[in-house]
Length: 207
Length: 207
Image (cartoon, rainbow over all chains, first blue to last red; front, side, top):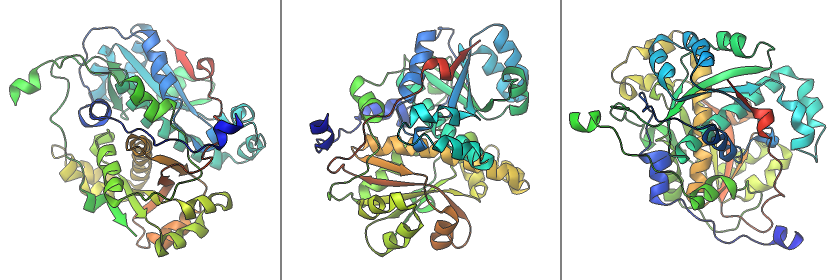
């Protein structure tokens, strides 16, 4: 272990063009889905890959409620904005991404060399909410790319009534919904023409 | 265009094991860096790949200030938490990720079929702040994986005085710092032993 830990790693690998296409340059937000099912194993594996990407102090506050087709889905659809209802009803799988507002309870396990950070978060709700929301949202970004890594299309939506979803699915108040993502294989005419991206002169500064 | 737009896409590709290792399973947060420089072209390309991943209503509120070594870096280091100063001073490049609080001004360009959304955000500062911070944070997740896609190690840090960084680098008040990331090739003994991840029973629910 010591020899490994103190060695300098070899040159890191880059992501090849096919990988960049799958995750970034060719991938698109899907608005229609084929009836091809998405298995529970696939849904678990999407999270199992995304979980490795980093969070502040390894806190990992993201949680996921998976809704397959059926009664659970029917309870979700009315809480989506009207323009999102048809696609949310028809997607093979839907993930409700949420922040665990009590994420700090896991800190002694997740950050064993600094278990007292749990008490810092327990004593400061504002800091806990800010940090939990920030890190769960970072993880939501990783999660969307992990959906794509599994050969599936993601349809992330922020148009929904979060308080209503929380009341419907998380009545104990511990989880709070931050993003809803339709998941499946793309259907007919699945996406719009690609929208523009900002230019470097509008986004990057240099010092 | 119509033929393309109405066709059903072929089966989407998956990300291969090497790509998963580069972005997720083998990649680690670096705490030391080799002196190997990181070029401006590499830094621009990291953003140029990350920009393709999705945001709500294509708003793209993330902005980046790149600090190479020199006077700019020296102005940043005192605003980092003490435990982050040495590594921030020594990294070949540092990215300050920020949200553009006036991101809605670009909406007529970015969402040409719904330019009036600009006015909705202009009239509602709470909604603008919430949406801007959420989407910039999603983009920060994409950005970290894009650093890795370029064969570089990222060292993301949330331990800094955001108000002091804003005052120092963004005095007009338009950009607000959300994350600072050291970027470079890993140096000697660059990372800790891998910390644990939560289990599925703590993170996933099914309906």
